[in-house]
Structure formats: C-alpha cells, structure tokens
Image (cartoon, rainbow, N blue to C red; front, side, top):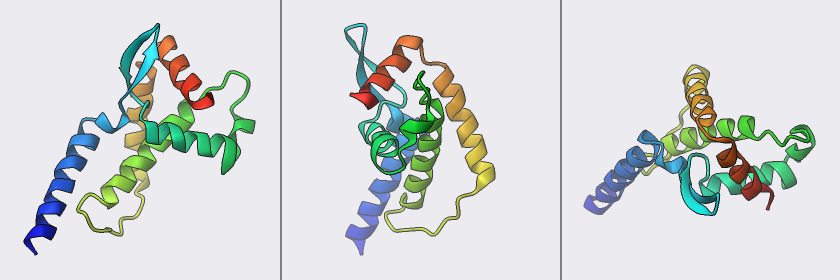
Length: 130
C-alpha cells in the first residue's frame, strides 16, 4: 500500500509541475538557428496534431493555405490538460469534460499562443508539417 501511495504522490507532484506551470507545453525548437523553448512545441502535442492533420481526421483539408494551426494547438492543449487531470492521482478518475473550465483554459491558451512571435509560429508549423 505504501508503494502505491508513493507512486500516486509522485504522479500528483509531476502533474502539478507540468500542468500548473504549463511546462507540459514547452519544447526546444530551432528559431533563427537557435534552440528556443517554445510553448506548444511539446513532441507529444506535435505528434497528436500530425495525427489529426494527416491520418485520423484529415484536418489538413480545413486549415487553408496559410496553415493556421492555432485552433488545433489551443484545443489540443485543453484536451491534454483534461486528460492529465483525470489521471493526476495515478488512478483513473471519471471526470466529465466541464465546458466552463474548458472555455477558461482555452482562452488562456489562445492568449499564450498570441505571445508567440511569427518566427516561433513558423517553427511550430514547420515541425508539424516536416
């Protein structure tokens, strides 16, 4: 029983560290030849977006020639946070997706996305399409 509690406690701490500080979103990407920590650059997130764009839902048909991925990035961030929250105790918690909380989280993700420079957005887009 102690081992189970210990593992659960560590998962909760890891969850709070990753989601609370939005570190889950960060990843190093090259911008102007330099490695830069960029929000939304997380490898798992970029892989999930590739799945949505090219395999599962074929969303590439809906993003237009300008390749505006902001809606997919912000939605995926909210989805990842919800999924991690469900698993934050180390055991599955049956939590409904609460739309009020999701709207607040989404608005925060949109604000965060808007802080990216054009070069950072271009680096994110290139990493998904490469």
